Length: 191
Image (cartoon, rainbow, N blue to C red; front, side, top):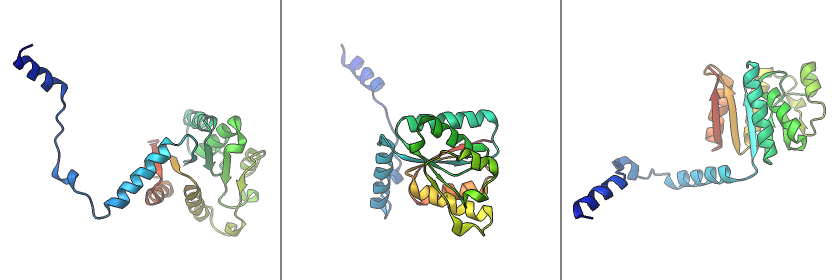
């Protein structure tokens, strides 16, 4: 092979990546950034995780079926699922999927008490072995109690999966909180 052919072959097999000067600079808090990335990578690579699934109540049945299947699959792989109560939508689908796979791997954190939940939610929670209630939030509005509940769910997880629309203010705040807490986040926008 001639030198010219070798040079052409080397050029074709190599990839040139432009380097921006800013990519070489480490921010002042670079150690923290590296530590955070290492922690997120370790979380992703773990075989069993605590995964929070939260999201909108207003979902078509096809989305609910997808979430139920996802929850079932994640629990089947040994993960623990953390969610809140809900008669329809994301939380209800998450509970159905986890209960079909392994109820012991499901943790439901309620914004208030079981007694304050609608009867269909109370019915759905029958047989869930790990339910956390909050009687101390009984006098709060459901919206305020839900915001606190979402934070509690996020604090307890390593990874957050959220199903929301672009107008879901409460869920956007939950994602921001998860980012601040350095959680691995997957957001599915439904609109």
